[in-house]
Amino acid sequence: MDEQEKRQRIQLADQLEDEQNFLLAVVSGSISLIVCAFLWALFSYASGYSYSFMAIIVGAVVGYTIKISGKGIKIKFGILAGILTVATIILGTMLVGAIDAAVYYDTTPWQAFFQQSFSDRMNEYLRYINLVDFAFMIIGIGFSSKYAFRNLSKAEHSALFTKQMYVG
Image (cartoon, rainbow, N blue to C red; front, side, top):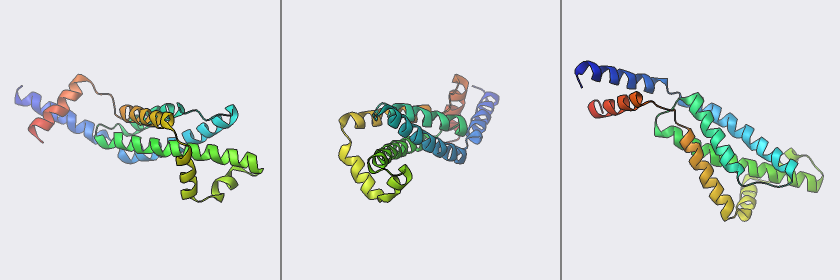
């Protein structure tokens, strides 16, 4: 590889790194967290059952949202997707519990949700989690982390590798 080609590859790598937007990924990922949690709760209420496989769907949606908005190539985008996926799963499950409590106590879901402290809701959630739920959560985190990164061409991979080798 001559110096001209090396400079072009490093310039492409710089462009890819400049296009990343972590703040937008955080904001859009957080919005998808809230939307997915509410949809999970509504779907569970409508069907009468909370499906563990929803964690995979939630993970894919959160990861894809971060990918589109953040255009990330750094590991922090995958970590963000994993964290937001766990938060979505926990919030969605807590909302399902709030809807169930609201029906049982003949109150609104908001009153049922905010009637308990966060630690009480977490303890309730952890008491009922089983191995299947945990497995689907892990798979959902994997999906979100996989989908959080921007798709790169061979030339873009090569440019990033070249920059890492020659610039650091």
